[in-house]
Image 1 (spheres, helix red, strand yellow):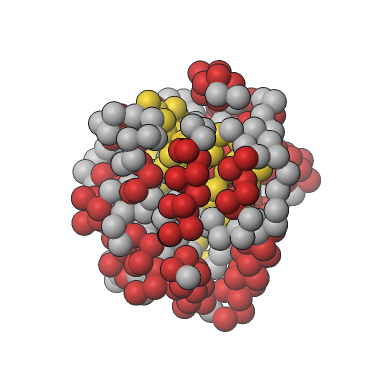
Image 2 (cartoon, rainbow, N blue to C red):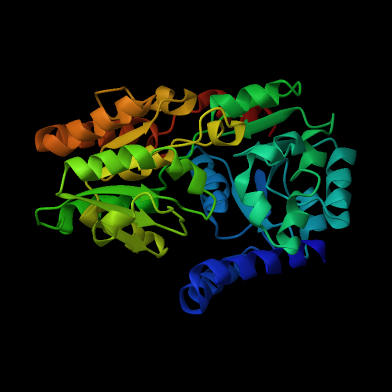
Amino acid sequence: MKSILVKIGKTLTILKNEGIFQGGKRFLKIGWQYLKMMKPVKAGDILFIAGGAGGASAIYRVHNQAEELSLHGFNCQIINQDNPWILSDVAKFKIFIFQRVLVTERIAEFIEKIKEVGKEIIFEADDLTFDPKYFRDIDFLRNMNKLEKELYKNGLSAEIVNDSYVKNCVTTTSYLAQILKEKNKQVFISKNKISNSELELCENIIKNKKKIKDSWIRLAYLSGTPSHDKDFATIIPELKKIMEKYSQVRLYLLGSLEIGKTLSEFQDRIDKFKHVDRKKYFENIYKFVDINLSPLEINNPFCEAKSEIRFTGTGILEIPTVAVRNQTFSEAISDGVDGFLAGNANEWVEKISQLIENEKLRQAMGQKAREKVLRDYTNKNSHNEEYYNYLRSKL
């Protein structure tokens, strides 16, 4: 019952942020995905238990991860934590990966049955919501409705990661890996990657779609969820300088984003877009975006833990990124080669300016970004042999 109430809370937030029409369409899509994850599954090697259904976290950390492992010979199945046949799945699988799961009485019973037969439990984390001590750094929690807050009340999946039986975790970044290692866990890093279907989609877009041809140069901030106001605010003064200096620059803003009044004089050069489906999302990026921006709050652990998908999701379409100079982006981006890193206000202005003024640099950097994503960030060409070998040892 608790899990259902949380999902109702999430639905209300979607409708509030995206409106009845767009939010309703998204709700129906997520609802259909949820129903597919409620069916009984055939026996296999690895069972992914997902707390969500069609959100970005479930896409990258459940569906894409399952596809990657399937490409390396593992038989993977996916269910939602509310699946009515979940207890019978203990006998069907040898490895159980829990992703953003709310530990209800039924889930606790499921975990105990796994432990009784000595099978492998792996905790999956793509952010710091499992540890309440970081909640002061998570801005979006303050604006959640009461039903949604129940999901994070004591730390999402905290009971699993803190269970001494659970020895292994899989996560997205070296920053998160270090925090999990402090809990005496063995940690495998399996980065967020582009799925085969999205890779094919992006290849078709590059081949068949045309970029808009006009005199504008568009800087994009793709916020994803309504939790990035403070991230974007870190570069608003620098963007004001950029828009004052370059009359040919427009801002392309995606998602529920409050930008304040600093840029109000440029309202006629700011385009705001609601969320669309994944296909249209990639098409719009390719068509409209010239330079991608990825700022984050500095010295905020929750922000430090985020992955490099803001670089890979546009790099696959040959679009260059200027990103905050933190640990994750510094590991992903070769500064000045396949992207730019900015560690202070001057660097943000300087590096965005270079890309605005130099079309050849934009094209070359975008091509290098795509080459890196194809080499290191696709399920088709992943590099996780240590992780695969460990999983094989448990089969």
